[in-house]
Structure formats: structure tokens, C-alpha cells
Image 1: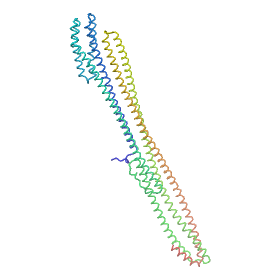
Image 2 (image 1 turned 180 degrees about the vertical axis):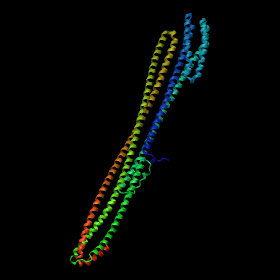
Image 3 (image 1 turned 120 degrees about the vertical axis):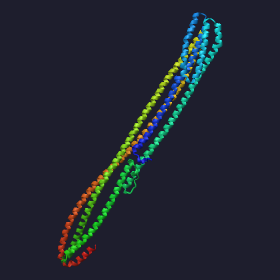
Image 4 (image 1 turned 90 degrees about the vertical axis):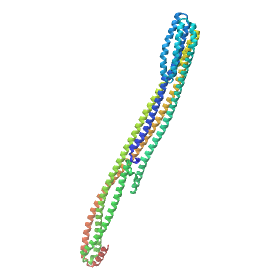
Length: 563
């Protein structure tokens, strides 16, 4: 299983952004597909079922008009009037035959009932043709008898069935509209739930990665460096086992820790060896000086024994100090040169640490750029949803226009009813047509009002989608701000690392200066040793003239050898 500590910072942040982008894209795709399905459903009702209701009403009006012309044929006594009535009948009949297949194609769900209605119309037309023949032949009694026995029952059942079919189609359309409304509400609830859960998951993932994968490991590294600065070079560095950028920094710190511990041990060993060598050299020198002094001052003049002894002791002390100083200065110079080389190594490691911190900064800046790109894509999605809302508004305007037309039609039907009432018995058929037109206008007004309500609901859902996308964009901007804060922190860490490099370089320069000064001290010690040798020679010359100092010299030599 892939551990979080083995993944670089950029892929971690990219994974969070990709997850949020997938959630946003999925919500947009789901909303788009559902809105398309719902829009297609409404369009289907407008094109088919709504048109079928109007066609059913129109078919009834045409049959009423045909029946009107049949009564005219029977009622007229003049041949010219009969011919006019027949022409009126023949003008309406093609409209009926053209309307039937169109009506059937717009209401396939009710095709069987429409076929039965078509059969009634054909039976009615066969009987009507016989009535027309009898009426044209002035056989009105037989024609009226046929009307009462066959045509009127068929006509009544035909009109009743036509109204029933229209009402059933309208009920079917209302049920479908209710189903689409339920689908719209379900889509809105699903979209809001998924968006909320997705944003919560993205926020939790971002907080988890930023805390567990970045800030906590960096805090632990900072604490380790602080303990190392206080002298605790045995601090444990757990982040060195990671495989991301923080692991690289941890391994660099571990290398610095190992190097500092190694150099401290080497310096302690060098000091111990130098102390042992200085002590051995001091004892050897003292013995050699005592032996030489004993051979050189075999006979000492008594008159100058005290002065010679004091001078000899002083010269011996100066020689020993100069020799020891020269030896220790040489050892210290070598150790200082080695320390300078070690400081240069530490400086190189610190520079590598600074480079790693700068690389982390660049990757965090890249993550911030990705978050800004995601904000731009969310804004573009918001514009698309707003365009959908504007399109729904335009559809609402068109529905309003249809509603106005229905109102005008209602007024015209009312005027036609008034005119038919004025015409009396002759305008009865026209009054029936005007009533049907008025009924159709009222139904059209109700349908347009329902469509306007549905469009208003669509606009409300679209507005909620815009708000949800605004929320998503705000969350992505917050992630961008977090990435920017991380970049600033990494930049401060880089500045601190550069300060370490600068201090180590200054320490290297100071070490070089110490080496130079120690070399000068060694040279001065050699000169002091030479001067002390001259004083010791003068004391030896004086001792040869002091015979009575033999006892003092022997005791002095015994003391020197025992030291």
C-alpha cells in the first residue's frame, strides 16, 4: 500500500485538486444530463400532447361544422342554396381527413381510441352522404328520419368521445408534468447532497495532507535542528525514512548530525594525543637537559654558584616553555587546518539543504497555480449555468406571448358569441363554434400558466446550481490561500538555511585566521627558544668557574630527573 510519506508534495496537492475537480465535473455533468432530460420531456409535451388536445378540439369543431352544412342541405328549398351548402360541406371534409392522421401521430398513447373515433367519423360520413342525396332530391322527410335514427346518435357519441379523449390527453400531460417536477426536485436534492459531501471530502483531504504530510514533519525537523543547535547531536531524525521532499531534508539533516558527531570525536582524539605527546616530550627534554647540564658544569666556581644556579634555572624554564609552546602551536595549527576543512564540508551540506528547501517552494507555488486554474474553470461553469437560466427566461417570455394570444382568442370568441346571439337561429352553429374557441383559449391559458410555473422552478434550480458553484470556487480559493501560506513558510525556511550557510562560511574564515595566528605563535616560540639557549650557554660558562656549586648542581639534577 502506498504510504503518504512516500509521495512528493506536488502529487499530494494535485490529488486533492483532482478529486475536487472530479466532484465539480460530476455535479455539472449530472445537472446537465438531468436538465436535458427534463427539458426534452417538456418539449415532448408541448409538441405532441398539447398539440393533440388542440387537434381533438378542432376535430370536434369541424364535425359540428359538417353537421351544420348537413342541416342546411335539408333545410334549403332552392337548388342554388342546396349547392352552396354542399360546397360548404365539401370544403370542410378534406380538413377532417387531413387532421385525423396528424392527430393520431401526436397522441400515439391514445392511438386505439383515435382509430375508433375515426371509424365513427367514417360511419357518420356514410350516413351523411345518404342524407345529402335525399335532401338534394327534396326527400326531406326521409332525410330527417335518417338523421334522427342514425346520424344524431353517431354524432352525439362522436362529440362526447372527442371531448373525453381531449380531457384524457390533458390529464396524461398533467401527470407527465408532475413526474417531471418530481424529477427536477430529486435532481436538485441529489446535486446539493453530492456537492456538500464532495466539498467536505475535499476539505478534509486537504487538511489531512497539509497537516500529516507537510506541517507536522516540518515541525519535527525544526525541533531536531533546534536541539542540535543546543548541542544534542544524538537526536533521532524519523523523517529521514520518508521518500518525499521532507525526507530529503531529513536525510540532509541526518548527514549534518553524523558529520558533526564525527568531527567532535576526531577533535577529542587529536587533543588527547597532543596532550600525551607534549607530556612525553617534556619529560624527555627535562632528562636530556639535566644530563647535558651535568656534563657541562662538572666544576662550578663557588663565588658565582648562587647567580649561576638562578640563571640556569631561569634559562631552563624558558627553554622548556618555548619548546612546549612551539610543539603545541604546531599541533594546534594542524588541528585548526583540519577544522577549517570540516567547516567547509558543513557549508557545502548547508547549501544543499537550501537548494532542497527552494525546490519545495517551487513545487508549492506550482500547486497554487493549479488551484487558481481550478477557480477559473469553476467560474466558466458558473457562466454556463447562468446562460442556461437566461435561456429558460427567454422560454418564459415566449410562453407569456402564447398566453397573450390565448387571451385575445378568448375575446374574439366572446365577440363571436355575441354576434351569433344577435343573428338568432341562423347563428346557432356559429355560436357552438365560438364556444369551442373560447374553451380552447381557456385551456391554452391554463397550459401556458403551468408551463410558466415549471420554467420558474427550472430557473430556481439553476440559481441554486450557480450558488453551489460559487461555493465550490470559494473552497478552491481557500486551498489556493493555504498553498500560498505554505510557500511563504518554505521561503522563510530557505532564508534561514541561507543564513546558516553564511554563518558557516564566516566560521571557516575565522578558522583560517586562527590557523595563521597559531603559525605566528609557533615562530615566536622558536625565536624565544633560541634566546633561551644563549642564556643557558652563558650560565654554563659561569658554572665552570664556580667549584663550590657542585653539591647544589647535583641536588638540582636529581630533582629534574625525578620530575
